[in-house]
Image (cartoon, rainbow, N blue to C red; front, side, top):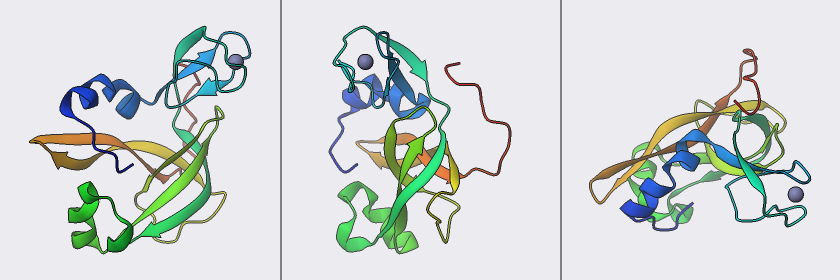
Length: 145
Ligand SMILES: [Zn+2]
């Protein structure tokens, strides 16, 4: 988070940002997210796109206030005073960082799921991406759909 993303780059990476599209290694089955050119485990280059469930467990979290917020989130910090960011271990394996929503008192180990939310607006384009909300135990979506 925090790096400037141009509109063309944003459009190119939208599938990964909103659809939680990762890559499964054809050799060792390790799943990478965000997608990379080579497997993070075995460096294999034969990778198959896979839609991640977005379901995982919270491994760590922090609370970001004005001093630590990247500029594109400044308006949110002014409005809300700050926001939680969590590190989530997805059930497919990758660990990803994202804002936590609908959470006032995060607990390490609590189940969470990715939800698509408005992130911020830049260059006249509203950017969407995933955040993590508490997972209330509804049926887990099938992996790799
Ligand atoms: Zn591999």
